[in-house]
Structure formats: C-alpha cells, structure tokens
Image (cartoon, rainbow, N blue to C red; front, top):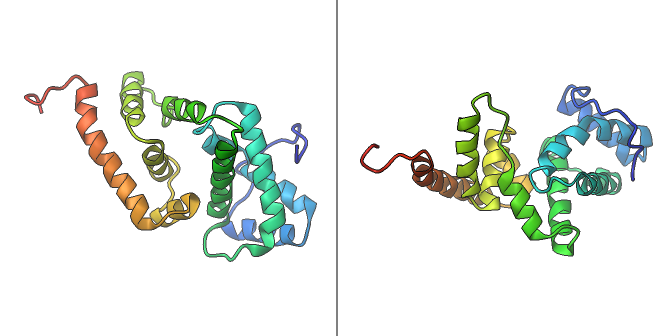
Length: 196
C-alpha cells in the first residue's frame, strides 16, 4: 500500500487546478508530502470513479495505489494540456484497463459490476431503477462516456483524454448511447409504440 489506510481523505480540501498543479510540481521534485496531499485530495473521487468498474474495495485500493505510483514516476512529464484531475482520471482508467488485461479482475466481473451500478442516488427509486435498466443496455464504453459527461461533468475533450480516444470517438459513443436509450427507455417504462 502506498499510504497508510488510516490517513483521512478530504476530497474537498483542494481548491483549484492551480493548487493541484503546484502539488504536482512538488511531486515531480520527489516531495512525498505533496504526493500524500494529492492522494488525500483525489482518493474519494478516484474510488467513486473506479467503483463503476468493480465493487471490490481491495481492487479499487490497488488501482488507486498503482495510479499514484505512476503519478510519482511521471509527474515531471505532465505537460499541462489538461487539468490535473483529468490527467489523474486518465491514469486511473489506463491502470484499470491494464488490470483487466492482466487478469487482476475478470472482465465478467467488470461488466457485471459496471452494469449494476446506479448512476447517482435518486429520491424516486422507480425512476432510478428505470434509468439503471436503460444504462445496462449500453456497452461498457458507452456507459462510461455517458457517466463521465452527465454524472461527473467532464467535457468531451476531458473524456477523450481520460479514455485515450478522440473527441470524435467520444461523440460517436455518446450518440449511439443516446439512440439506444431513446429506443429502449419507453419499452422499459412499459410504453408501447401506440402510446408515444
């Protein structure tokens, strides 16, 4: 484990990307305290993101720790083309894909967990169930871009950086996801073609 699990996590402690950039520069200079601050600032956010891939806390912690090992090694290579948060999410995404390829967790587990995750807590449980059923009809790639955009609030450019794809690919995945949702959501709600 990279850091002591007893370390408290304060997601809202960091204020701006400029603060994150200063921390990252200190990490590039091998400042362990700066790495610990960045870890505390992003642990919860990365855990929520990774929970979309698996619900196993041990795997989530492993990926987060591997992510911060990469941050420790590559902080000096950060070009500043994106926000620090986008760069970190991209690293976590790639570490997750590598873990999937290496068999750290099976794809079936990944897909099952990914499909079963509710987008966000709703007061209306029927609506939440309906939306969740619709999202389960999407491919993992389509669902990921929809959640990154609509739940986590990332721009198309940020999603492209996180997923290491082009903006055109992100737009295509979102387009196909919307078309699929438009076709399946009425059926899931029990609405027939005559009622629409």
